[in-house]
Amino acid sequence: MLTITPLTDRAIEIVAEGRFTSAEVGDAFNRMTAILDDMPKLDVLADVRGSPSIALSAITEELKRLPLVFRMIRQIERVAIVADAQWIRTASRIEGAVIPGVHYEVYERHEEAHAREWLLRHTDVARPPAG
Image 1: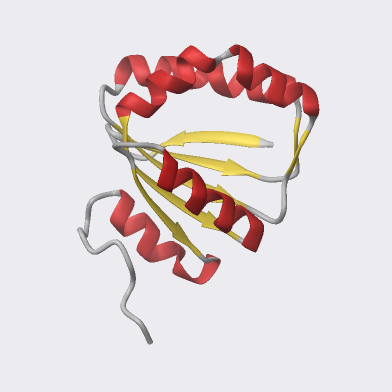
Image 2: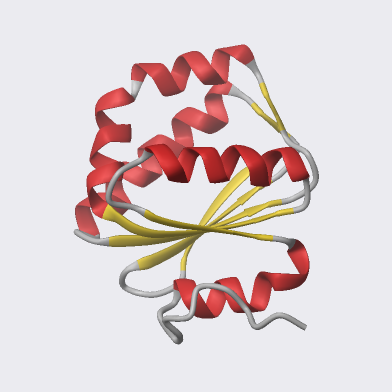
């Protein structure tokens, strides 16, 4: 399941959990098109719950939407990933390292409040204090 919720005039939250189908991915891309039309600069809080799985047809759907993916990359400034699964956090760090111009930060579940504060630009400190 993919749920997209506006947070501010420049930020959205995407909650991802369970298995993603091509229909859900297609609907999410349609929603993102409308959001990008309204928000020239965008920050994304991605809340990845559990260890989601993706149907092969959903990957095909994403590949069909590559022009939109590139548009998203140009418009997104900050991404905060909050994930339960270590493999999601690792993949997100790799993704953040290879996508130019987007500030990615990856958080564990217990850091969710700080992730939200950073994403909403209530703080410029990307990492919560140790301790």
